Length: 572
Image (cartoon, rainbow, N blue to C red):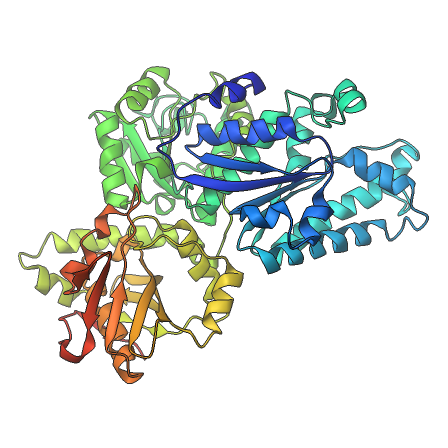
């Protein structure tokens, strides 16, 4: 973890080339150092955070005044930090303490509603750092009139509140403080003299947690964990020791490797892709996954398995190309410092944690990094590993065909085209937040935004699934068309999963767009490409589909459009 002094030094770095992201900070205590921690950690994550810091203890004044500086600033994200110390003071001045938590939760919910009414912004609130005021001692856990009881009820209520509001996110200070300890979280002298409730050593933890949430909301999230094998996923060397002698499971140090494997499997179940990159003979490396009784991870948990004696950096590039995701969305775990440095030097955008020497410390260290922050989770995420394994089958079949058209016909592809509805809106919002490559305008939407768009008469919305003989890719493309005038439709959003590129889905989607335009009397479709660092693959998208450039936009007239060839049929 970086120190507060290091985060402060980060503020001197030149980040003018990065697109500014407006962040508003509101707190019930002195927030100058929190501001520095957030902005400084943002630099670490490649974020140029333009901060607005409200005055001391001005949360309600800023939120409930429509003409406040907060709303004039128009932030992309609002961070609200509230302290346990101020909460305790309020609690002591309440007569009805049994209902204290409910009142705090209701008040927080009202703050969120007011913010959502005036801003199209992500909102981040914190759970409260847990303390026992020792009025009741341990009995506090049994009586509803104790501060500890109400505090825990508040934190659970805030989590439930965020769970039902997709634009509301939690900075989980409770669990972070539990790891660091309250004495390392709170500074009594700073609190008494300056009303700064967090100690200098804890401020980087706040900066890290909040910036990781912000980064995830901007599509900067980790999607793949690449694992070494020997002395990383198990103890020992499989080629020398053999499957029967590697260390996994209890008792002893094998337990540490089992803990890591359990964590990896949970990540896979959440939608993180697992890949193997090992200097080993493939058959020998795979043997424990097949036959070892204590292995938690199995071959079916791995999206791509690379084991050979080649350079690991080259193998990681192969994995990245096969999965077709950004290198900066991947994490590589290896126990060997030499291999780590080789890979970091060759691929600087890859995240390569410096694992502790003792495997017993692996999980404590990895949890502290919080590498896989997310602001969304859908049922489709659970199927991701299987979808990538199916893609490997398609690739093998493709290699057996000399003619690409014959290959596409052989896939027997089908797509279901629907309007966005309450069942698909979570996945649609997730795609707008996480898709960076095939994303023409990179406009981010929350579930609430999508619900508003899908119910508006000003838009036509589409979702596209894609399945073939190897399996179902799920919802893989979305299009949002906005009515410009009586004759023109504007392509507000066009996003596709990179897993389905070069399978004629672009042509199939455009055919559907044109059909809708014609049906409703529109004779012109207007598209726009807004370049980012990651969406260069769609730079020529509109031109390749027959659009004509007109200034900064692309236009297609529907009256002379001829349906493009596609190898996908509509699924009824």
